[in-house]
Length: 231
Ligand code: HEM
Image (tube, rainbow, N blue to C red; front, side, top):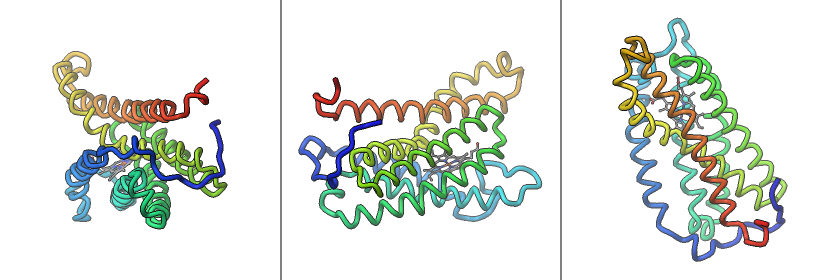
């Protein structure tokens, strides 16, 4: 699929040491500060998503997803921070394991369950299942590449995993203009149902955000390849 080199991760080139990590951490902090607190009360009445009637598993699994997702988002920032990687090799390995085993993998597995039980209709359901499955697959492939010491491939797959981790924040942002654009169509396109309009706006966010971030990631990865490899 991509080039393979049996060399450990090298120190980042000067070009890579840019202060994008600060805005990234601010975005992550803002997203977590806004999204997570209602779930720390462990009270279903504070949930932004209504648990399906008669399903006692949904709410605890949603809370677990949010907590593992928080671990994934926080540790992902350290994983892709070139200076942290270069200066704290051991720290990078430890946060990497936390990211995979206490973050992306459990949050992704739980995403499959809560995604299936979404109240937001079939389009959101399929997007949730596809997003969760992709998150699991790219993370597992990245883990396998690391175990095989195929570090170039490992970096590529973990970059895709990172993109999917961040896609949740972008989907919430896309939701805002989608809602603004669709609101005037409640009485026409959505036959008077505000609920249907909300589901459609959510669907646009959950489909577009992973797609855009995966495309952006692969474009950035291609750009960073040595010119000779680009053909
Ligand atoms: C690709 C990665 C992710 C996938 C596929 C995913 C999947 C899901 C699904 C299926 C739901 C239920 C939505 C519904 O019923 O329609 C959900 C809810 C939620 N997820 Fe994730 N998730 C991901 C990453 C994350 C991360 C990294 C966090 C960080 C904390 C997170 C936090 C939440 C929160 C807070 C909710 C509840 C909804 C809300 O209050 O806005 N998720 N997620």
